[in-house]
Length: 94
Image: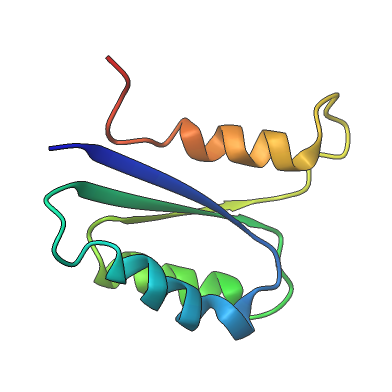
């Protein structure tokens, strides 16, 4: 059995989150692997944060990280956010 962690960066994606999560959760059907989904919100100004907080409360294998843009970072904001998500993996590399 594999442990699969998926990091999803989010920025003002409220309109497509329901469709995205439905498709992601369908991956679990008929598969013996364990999935975890880590959503990293990069300061959305729409309802993305509220949707993801609710999802995290209702689904045990969903994690939600609320972040701000890392303007002063020498790395790109996407890289910093993806790294923040990877650092939340429940299933660590061996």
